[in-house]
Image (cartoon, rainbow, N blue to C red; front, side, top):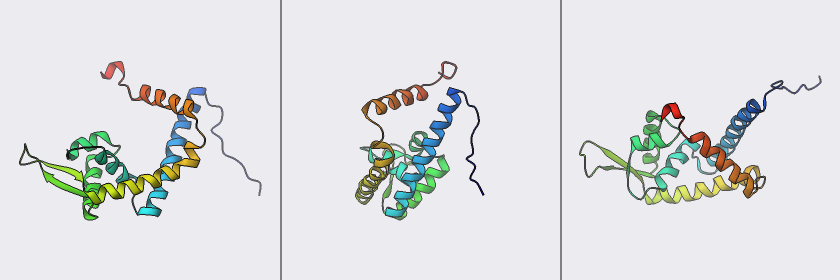
Length: 155
């Protein structure tokens, strides 16, 4: 039986660019997720929470983390539970609000993040770093900055 490649048909340049972004995001996300799970039994969603926590000098409210990641509030809570069970995350009472809890990486969590981040970088090397030069990266940064800007009717 002959192989037939599926096609999206005739796309406008804008449609092609959009689906290219979707393809790139899905492909790179899957690549990194598989590498992290294989090497560290650490799904990408857990890594994302660790990435944000690793960058903080002080514990943060889980709600702040939910607003910064691509995860819902309930997903952040489940990930925090899983990371705490592994000893990677600590829940700390807020110094200003007795009803509030803040979260932070433990020293073990920071070490696990460093190891996982090295795996992430290695997984992306061939698929991303080796294919894109500094001009490509700068172009992606400009596009990303434009896409993240709020629209005039949302400001």
